[in-house]
Length: 224
Image (cartoon, rainbow, N blue to C red; front, side, top):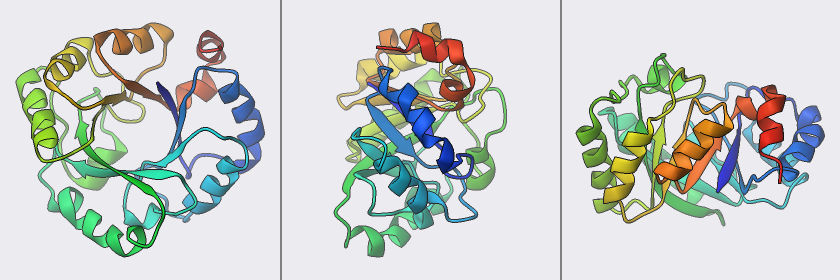
């Protein structure tokens, strides 16, 4: 499976028809919508505009509880397991409950691990947490398993938007070997070879963002 991530702060909804012509001509299976911040509160408008363009599943990938809207199909209910900041382990989740309990969203408990991609990411700045070093494979595996054992339905390994280095195949393989739940991988994937490496290593779903829009050659390689 392949998800295209749309950041409400960065997308111009007038560009969506052209973007979705590309998406529908590609192997994309899901749309994720979200970002570390949404200062102007664009998420709901972007979700509504996206839903008008596609029948693909649209899932929220929120940076905080204010980005939740029942206009989407579901939400990755994220816990930042790689950090130790209670705000993103449980506080944001509690703040989201008044909205979520009255929504019809599919709620998918997701363990979120920020992996060092070689550059500081917005997630790192906003969450005030450090990513796990790619060399510390054992810690990554144990953190992912802690998520599974605590009831998460998905594990998401994320190098972050604009990462210089994607999550390494050896990390993906090590985590996948131990997990009994689906594995999502994203951040820093800009070529078809990187995409194939992630799948071959065991990723069930790969997420790409700006590379899909900005690199026409990459898009052409993802055509059906």
